Structure formats: structure tokens, C-alpha cells
Amino acid sequence: MRSKSVLSAGLVPAVGMIAVLGLSACSSGGPTAGQRATAPTASSAAADATCVRVDADSGRPFWVGEPSAELSAAAQELQGLVDAHAEALRGVSFCSHYEGVVVFASSDAPAGVLAAVDEAAGRHPLATVSVERHGLAIADLKAAAASLATRLQGEEGIVSIGPDIEAGDIDVGIDESRITAQQARQAVASIVSQTGFPSPQVPIHFFDESGVATNSASALAVSR
Image (cartoon, rainbow, N blue to C red; front, side):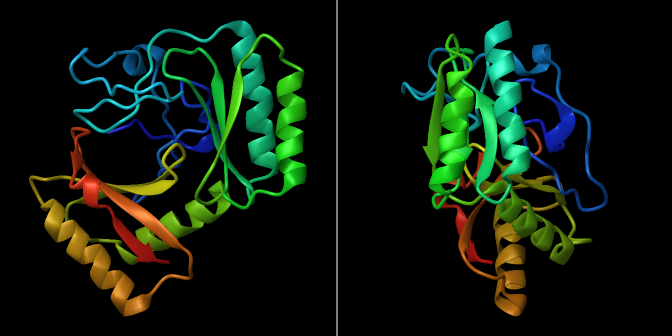
């Protein structure tokens, strides 16, 4: 699955990255550019023109190449805004071929925060910056993931839990030699039904440790 690291780990290549809330400890090691630069085969690459493209086989984003100095500078400044407005923004990611960067904002991000993003982008005229508004801000998504991780502490076969900044959901990593996707889904559903989460609903996707989405087309949406 997508390499995971804390939000402050750096800019290679997803600026915001996934903050893993592991069941025992957080992971702070980020992937190298070489580890993240392998493109999918032509047959498996998703046929779309979105900024962050997804490999059709694994269901995960991919990146190829390296960012320009101007693009990196823009991404660094925009990530600073995410850090300052964690209640409204979710993260920053390079486009899959480093042709630009995208800022992920919550669906209800205030106009003032979005204006600050536009202003920051304007200081980097050679960098293409886009904004996508959907889902929760990173503060809310991390809180949901932390809550779920606490409730699943000790659950056999669930190896990682963390927010996905691009999709705006929670990724649950499983070891399919120890638990099936169906069992993992049942465990999460049981926790939710017994304890409940505060609203709103958050999609949850399950991935085996090799990175292939498991039943990702029918993600479990839980009322957190």
C-alpha cells in the first residue's frame, strides 16, 4: 500500500502524506523518491487526466519523476498553510508526473483559507496549483483514524490505520495471512455498532500489506 509517514516527514512525493496511527506506534520513516517513482504498466494506469493518478491494479496513487525547484517551493509554502489551517485543509500532493501540485481542502473550508491558498499560489507563477474540496480536514481525519486505532488495539491482523489525504478516507492495512478483508470489515463494523463515532461519516478502505486494495469498491462508511 502507499508508504506512510507523519505529516512532517517531508515532500517526497505526496507533500501531506499519510499520517499513520499504527496500532502500537506511529511510523515516521518516509519513502525515497526511488521507492515512489515506479509507474504502473500502460495497461494498469488509470485512464484519466486527474492530477494524482491511480494505478488501476493496486488502486493506489503513483508518481514518476522529480519536482522542479519552483514546484517544490510552492508545495513547501502550501504545506505550511495546511499546517496552519489543519481544521480546514487536508494536505498537499504533487501530481503524478510532477506537472503541478494539488491542495486538498475540506468540503466546508472557509473562503478566507481558500483565499490564502490562492495568494500563496500566486507567489509561484511557474507552478501549477489546483484545489480540490471534498471530505474532511486533516485534523478531523486524523482524529477519526486515532479513535478507530484505539478501538482496534490488539485486533489480530490489522497492522496500520491512517488517513489518506488524496481520497479523504481512512486506510486500514491488513495482513491477509492473519485476517481476511471480510473479517477486518466485520471487526470495524462491530466496533462502530458497539461504541459509535461522532459524525460525520468517513469512508474506510482496506488494503493488504502488498498494497492491493481489498474490496475497495465497497468501502465501509462508518458514522464516527
